[in-house]
Length: 61
Image 1: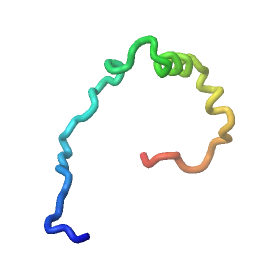
Image 2 (image 1 turned 60 degrees about the horizontal axis):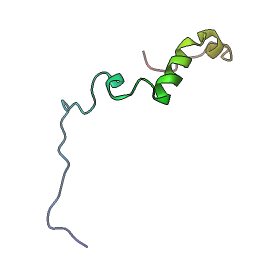
Image 3 (image 1 turned 180 degrees about the vertical axis):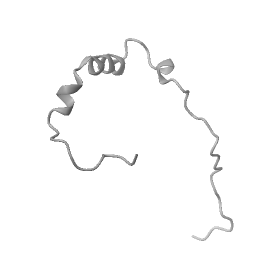
């Protein structure tokens, strides 16, 4: 099937779809909030312990 016109989605670099603070949209007793609070209480050393270090950074600085 051939179309007679080309259709594009409007592209706007300044469009803001989500609120700046997603906490507004998530209820206090939602599972994601509980998981977030639990992860924030973890000692960072537990997360970094398996990595031996060295090498390049994991992202461009």
